[in-house]
Length: 452
Image 1 (tube, rainbow, N blue to C red):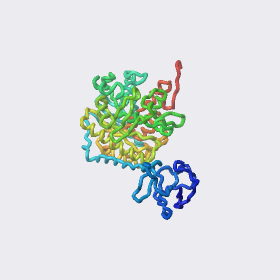
Image 2 (cartoon, helix red, strand yellow; image 1 turned 90 degrees about the vertical axis):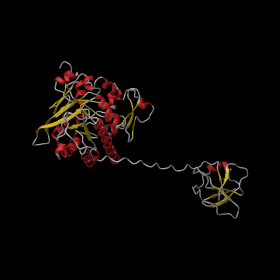
Image 3 (tube, rainbow, N blue to C red; image 1 turned 180 degrees about the vertical axis):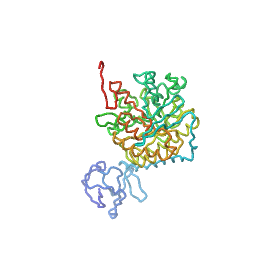
Image 4 (spheres, rainbow, N blue to C red; image 1 turned 60 degrees about the horizontal axis):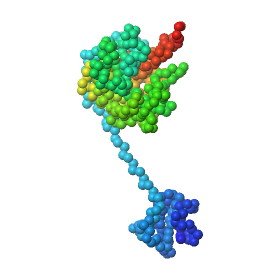
C-alpha cells in the first residue's frame, strides 16, 4: 500500500487497513483536490472526503474491483464513498429588504376635530411648563394631569366612583389584557368601554398592547432594566409586565420557544392565560381599539430594550414608523370620534429621537406620546426630555397638540416632565404602592400602616 501525505508517496507493508486509516495521527491536510503526481509506480489517488482526521490521499496499486463504495472520477482517479462527505457550505439567505417608510404625502393634511381639541390656558415664562385642557367626547382633561392605569379597565382596590370624586379624569386601559380577556368583541357588545365600566362621563385612553407583548421577549438582566428601572433609593420608574408573572404558569414558555415573534406583518405571541396564539398587526390593534371605544388610542409600535445595538435600534425605529403609519391609515378609514397619538421612539439617541419627531409630526396625528426606552434612571430621563421637548415648539401645529409621557409617573419624574412641557403622564406605580401603604407627596414618599 502507498500513502500520500503533503504530496509525497510513502510505501510500507505495515500500514493499517483502509477501515482504520481515519485514525492515523500523521500530518493531515485538506488537500482534497490534490492529485498524486507519481504516476511511474502506477498509484491511483483515493481522496477521502469528510473528517479532517482522514488521510489526505490513499493510493492503491490498482483500482479496487467490484467495490460499489468506490467511484471513478472523470480524471481516472477514484474516491472512496464510504468516507463521510463534507457538508456543502450553507447557502446564504438573502436578507429581505424592509419596505419603505410611507411618505407624508400619502396622508391628508391635519384638520382640527370637532370632538377633540386641546387648548393652552397658560404658559410659564421660566420653562416649557403649560396649563391646558383637552376636550374629549366623554369629558375634559385638565393638564398637566396624572393618568391612572386600569389594566383590565378597572382600578385595583379603588372604585371608579371614588376615583372620579377624587378628581381622576383620564383613565388608561391596556388593550393587551382586554384583548385576551374578556375580548374586544365582548366589550363592543356591551356598548364600549364607557358602558362596560359604567363610567359614561369619564375619558379613556388605550394603548396598542405593544408594551406588554414585547415585555415577554426580554428576559436578560440587562434588558429587565428597561422596564424595571431603578434609581437612587430603589424606586421603580416602570414595571415590566412579566416580572409579576415569574411564579405563574406561562404556557408560552413551557415548550422552550420564544413567546414573541416579530415580523414586518406584526407580532405573534402566546396568551399568558391559556397559551393560545395571537397575531397583533397595526391594523388589528386599531380595530380592537375601535371595538373597545376609548377616546384616545395608540398605534402599534416596537419596544426595544435599553441595552440594544444601534444598528438594531435603527431597524426598530424604522419598523415602528412603518407600523404607526399603517395604524394611522387604518384609523382614518373610520375615525369614530377617537383621537390617535403618535409614539416617538429612538431610545436615548439624539439623532434617532430627532428623526422620529420630524417624521411623526409630519403625519396627521392628534397628539404625541413619548415612548420607547426612556433612559436608565431619572437623570437620564430628565436629560432626554430637556433636549427633545423643545422640538415640539418649533411650529404651531406641533405646539398646539397634547403630549403624553408613557409609563412614567413617580413624583420626581412628574415634576421634571411638567417643566419640560408634558401634559399628561400614566403609570401603574402610584396606585400600586398606594395599595401597600405608601403615599406620594411633594416631600417624598410617606409610608403609613394600619391604625396610624
